[in-house]
Length: 243
Image (cartoon, rainbow, N blue to C red; front, side, top):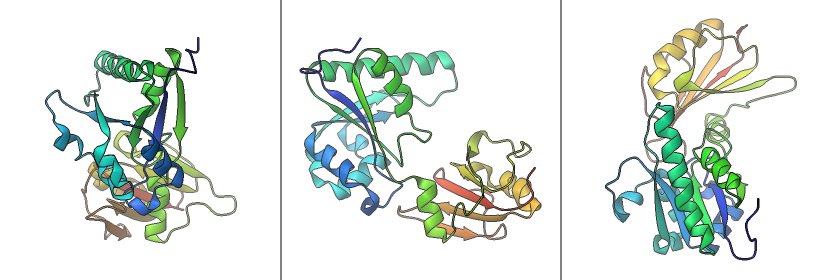
């Protein structure tokens, strides 16, 4: 049941793009300027404002919207865990904290890297908040894999090519994904395995680390790509005979 639209706020999942603040959309900038409460995930209980401001999404957005430095920051405790019970409980608790702001008539902007529809924590929270009866909205941002492809000078898909977006950290390189272009997200810790699995099928490999951020590196070819790199690494495997 939808709550009173005249008095409650809206939860927005706002994509801030992959790293370069110039890739933030005008809509993202406008919404951040227009609203007071900015939600950011934290991984442990003890934190202060300075720590929240070290969030990658915050550091990107504040360069495009200096007013963000004066906004109210809402920390949401969302620990890194593979325990379903821990994840469910933390997401429910975070959604209830958001609901408290919405009931007070304040909309909440959840800042997220890239686009909120691509491997984002926002999706889990949005479902719960919507089930509680509040209005929610996804606000698209430039995806990391599109920005990485542009940085590497590689078209992702042409003519009848398929495009596969895969979670690099969970990937089994023995799984069949067909022909076309494979994008492997957040794959820095799996590069050696990815090179062995995809580099031997004739695919052209590219990797971009920290796209649009300080420390950006672009690698072309399996020989250039290191065996390990940072968390924000996108691999593009183009062509080949993957069946």
